[in-house]
Length: 317
Image 1 (cartoon, rainbow, N blue to C red):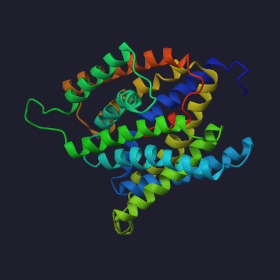
Image 2: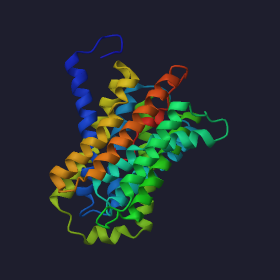
Image 3: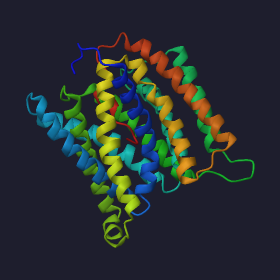
Image 4: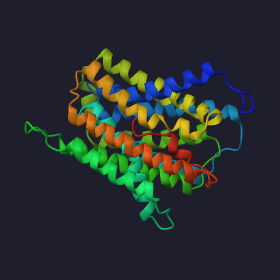
């Protein structure tokens, strides 16, 4: 299907359903996968396999081979997005519920705005964006603060999620500024391969290889790894790229509001993760903040020539 041919409503609905549900479910998939597979090696396997498949698929598009500089740029972006971004999210889910992880990561636009504002030559945020950032920070504080019964969220896990989100924002910004192949699929494949290699190195340095050899890997973890690789990294990405070709970007961006809600619901339904009043309030505030930031960003994007190629990669999917 080419951009000049209007897609059917059914295909658009199916593509949105895939992006909403699959990417929203990857947080729970990560939790199941790391129950018996070390986190960094699990993520490395996921992205190395998906990257190799996607790169082979991208060769069908033709075009010139990537240059050494493009490979280097894609690797650096992949390390920021996947080695640090996804890797730390995967590791943090050993310590915090998957639904909470999704909500903290959902505030990524807050860090994107802040890093963009402080970098040399960056764009200063508009008034609505500043309000969105402030609201998003309030939502984060509500989520991670101590509850009425004195219990508290694991702050080490929260710190990992915050660093992961900041790294994803930095990688997204860098992807806009460096030379990368024009093909989204090829660029993403290269970033997956570079990020996957970084995850493999960290997993080996972290001493996960002996644990992997000795661990009793369960069928649930293997199925979760396959799901993350095939559905989270390949199918949902393909649907996302297709939507960007046929649907207005502002409509596609709604996945950022839906994914954390899906993640919280699935964590409660399938993993017995608690959903408290504070969680619901914090989730509502963060989603509202992302709506404000994305709304203002969509207006600014009308004056922008090129969107970031690396933005299709997420810290979870």
